[in-house]
Image (cartoon, rainbow over all chains, first blue to last red; front, side):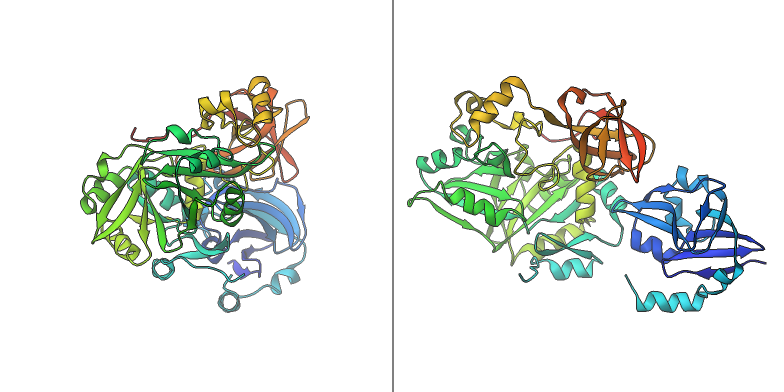
Amino acid sequence: MSEKKYSKKHEWVSLDGEIATVGITKHATELLGDIVFAEVPETGKSVEKEGQAAVVESTKAASDVYSPISGEITEGNKAIVDDPSSINSDPEGGSWFFKLKIKDKKEFDTLMSKEEYDKFCKENPN
Amino acid sequence: MEVQKTALYNIHKSLGAKFVPFAGYEMPIQYKDGIVKEHISTRTFAGFFDVSHMGQFFLEGDETLTDALEKIIPADLRSLKINHSKYSFLLNNDGGIIDDLIVTKTEKGFCIILNAACKENDIKQISQFLGKNHKYHLNNELSLIALQGPKSVEILEKLIPSVSNLKFMTGNKFNFEGENLYITRSGYTGEDGFEISISNKKVEKLINFLISNDVKPIGLGARDTLRLEAGLCLYGHDLNEKINPVEANLKWAIAKKRKDVGGFNGWDKIKNLLANGSEKIRIGIKPEGKVIARENTKIFSTKGNEIGLVTSGTFGPSVNAPVAMGYVKSKFAEVGTPIQLEIRGRKYGGKVSGLPFYKKSYVK
């Protein structure tokens, strides 16, 4: 059974054992608008907590996607590279960005719960 | 300076607009549907754009007014017929583009549509050439609405009979609820369409009519993707005071007679460039794959030498691919030339492309 948490930079992390799946939240896609480009990290790359890991671009601008957690990339989602608009339609399901093998579970525990994240979005609408 | 709002601000709000500051105005960047849907509905049906932030500058005078304007505008204003429009520029002494504009001959003189961010300076520059017998004013009582897309003519004809008689780049006065409107068949999307100059008091009625005919509001975001697909320049990005019309690949917009005879700002330089070509020139760019080359992306030759800079770049929803424009050294300007684009520190392939990216459908 996986557990899902959220970051202040609008990424979600779903943890299953030591493998975390990371994507951007529905709220993030609403802020971004129509997504037209995505770049995901190579397998084997090390990422640091809050370090730049992927790129997402809407018609308006490019944004970095940060990894909310440290670890080593085990897979980038090629499906969103081929069809970036799928991130708008299914941001928290099939359109995840990357999976990584985490270094420290404590980093995961400090992230926000769904309720905390929703409250955070309400207080920080932009 | 206080942020300005157009007469339609509250309507935009009620239509779910997201606002951004633009040239001193609060303007909608998009509405509820978002940029891609707005773009597609303009290309397949029709969309309306509030472009009331642009300057509607009216000049009145005799032939000496034409002479005065021809010193700063390289169009053949002398031969311009009443109700006909031309795309042109204001030029500085060095041939650099102070602004790009549409000038229309009116019964009493001319009307010039100026870019919002430039209009104050433009008027300063133009007025230097004017005499005491020339009258001019920027009309802030008027809104400007662009109606663009293949269904525009059918829809507007219902409200304004005989508007369909207008040809591309001509205009006329029409009656709407006892008031004169001035409508030109023109636009900034590559589609057939109209620009409607209407009083701030009546504009809401026009918009309500368009909405009731399923015309969608279109924000600045889609305006940018539409004009870029059509290969049209955006002042302040693709054009500025340091770029001349030859470099901008806009020499077609300098009237033939004016090219031969001159008599406008920067002619010496432009004459020389027309004869010998410019060092750099504006081109279209198609990046490989889906990567977007935004403004200020560096352009390299396949040998790795820096050869230019992107000035506009986005994803083109109708061509379903990224599109860009920029300037390169002229020897790399041939269509099909492979180039490299440096994006986030990495080099991506691309090719010099012809313009427009999306075929224009003007009614000539």
